[in-house]
Length: 466
Image (cartoon, helix red, strand yellow):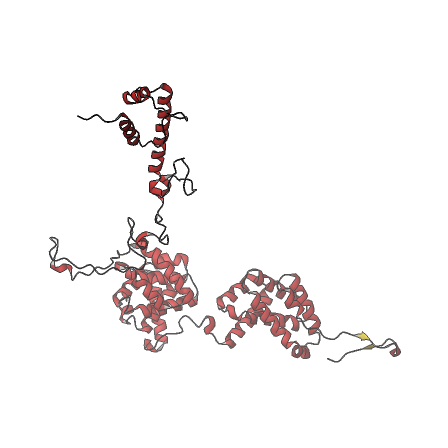
């Protein structure tokens, strides 16, 4: 067996540990056999051993740092410095980053936002109709022809009143029977269909004549679509039974219900035999009065062969202008005689012509100009002040009434010589009372004033022609 040279053994040991530096420093050459023999046998000096341990520890630290930073693409030199000059970052930040680690991409979410948990799909995605699997154990032949519909439970008495009352109140505002029919079709009235005319008539009894006219038209339009003839018969029977309770709120309920019955017969939604079936069988005096009222109205209208269109009168904007002018003129004359402001206010509201209130302003100012004493002057000022502060007559209607007076004052002055002076004083008082605004007051026309002429006239007054 050959024995290797001690120098070769020493060189192999140094290469195995990847040591590039010499274990011993200094410029002296160790060529002695004793030193070689100590190296082979492992007998190193204490200082050399400590120095070797420090070198090995430093290299292990370098290898550990270089392996940790290898995944980031940063190389570390032997002296521990970063080769690129960039400080290493924490690996946790990179792991939590959703951006591309290769530096590519636009930073958009993966799969267009349709790849997360609980996500239905990309925005705007349309799914195909799911086909029925015939091999499914739960498959039934009638499953394909099934039609699913929304079931609406029928309304009870409390829910019926809460649902239908707002519909009727809105109808009194817009007057569109088709809209009411569409809204009622969405409700499952069920057995409460006969209660619809009862509720409508009860609300109309507490309202105005125009509301009763609208209710009669609604019953005529709903008959055959939402209501049947049997429902109307049952509803009018219930109305006659509830008359003792309706009289408590509306003393004229028997006469008004009789007019509803007569109008229904005239419109063709009730038969004349309906009243004949009650002959001799009515014990309630209120029901008897209602049926008698209906019979008299039908007798007066040619035996009931024609429709009773004017049973509620012609109210609101349907009245002719001449009739409205007469009504307003009578209203003002009665107010001058009685002095009851509340009665005049009630009569004006019953006319239901808010667009024609400028006529009252015009007639009131005209009566002030034509009056001789101050009584009419003060009463009209009081009436206009009350109507303006209560909001019955708006500022727009007030302006239109005064504009008409301003436009016709030259003609009025022909009959009333002092019309200009009275108008100026009345307009000023109306402005102080808050009835009119400053622009309306400033538009008031004024006639020419008396003035002195030149000094040569001796101080005589000269009247201007106007």
